[in-house]
Image (cartoon, rainbow, N blue to C red; front, side):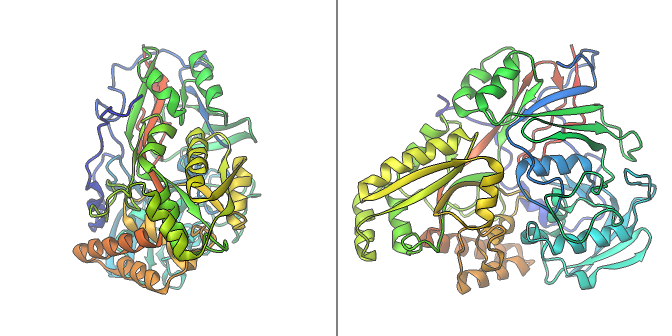
Length: 532
């Protein structure tokens, strides 16, 4: 087990840089992997991948992308595809610094308005030029999508102004300090206004999703594979990989077996129980970093008992979180005490991990007038850590008379059930993609964003006001103070059982070079090459 293994984390406060107003940026849009978080680059060789070609990488992933529309869903598999097919106005590097993307420069006109100068000579995959009009269309559409409005809904469509073919102004409804970081999200990828309708849909065809990114989707068979092929007219630096062949394997054992037998070059999300063996296998290299995400159990406030604050607190007190995390993740993750990880701006170190206290849990149940009840926990197929966590929670809650049933569904059904709020409780995860507390807290707990991201149906005028104040403030110290207050409030309200801040592990064959592991899982596979 890895319970005592030290991981090299990114700097705890790198997200502070997101608050700076940028004009342009540096030339380094990535991170040169070394001992910190990736593979030390060697001399470029001519070796080939498992496909037999030196420009074709095969990667096993754990789930289908839920939507090929960047505004159609916000799950990790979908976002990783969007990262390759569409370009954004700005990009983030490993440290979450903001760098130029489609916008070669920008400036903040006033506290609510930004002006972007679009790089000329960029064309969409159909050969038509990308202009400021496409940017305006994309931002208007994104702001109206229920799936991505929680982190792009601050855009005010009425303030979007196309100054000329390559200059666009984008306004927000209120001052919003981490706006640039939100524009680096895969959901902010620019699409051609001539090919996609106004309403995002999971049924959108690849032909409608015309981007300007380095790759095009050339094949997709649900539950089997998705193929990205290099677009040779890409206006940016041409990627090394001609083909990125994604094999969809929900079963973690199957993914690892595929790597061990040489059927794939790389796998995503190995099972925690396999990590120690993988790290000690000379046939693999494993890139690691602290993630920007966390795992939790969410409780539906509309449930007759889970909607009672004392009951939710009792559930938290009845659980031994440290043991759950250690056992379920095989020591590969760390218990999390607050509602955002320690490497996110706004983290509140003053909240301690709640320790198991059965007596206090029973007192809270008595205060609520609840002797015991039954509820279901939903989890998704292929995530062994979530399944194991649910089983331990099921066992430990028996001590206070709560009977738990676990239901496991495949990924698409899991997301659909969350969208419909048709659950009692669920095992979930959230990645703080921007590195800012707003992204962690506003979408999950503001009452305006049910069911898109406020899955538990939490509704508090007091909390809404705090979240809104923290969102509009441009004073760093004030934001930190507000987020501390918010996290203290959430600790008492207990909408979640907070479980862990995970470490990311990406195993690959030893001839894979130049892979950049991103803490928000927005990995880019195009720059990989094979070497001797």
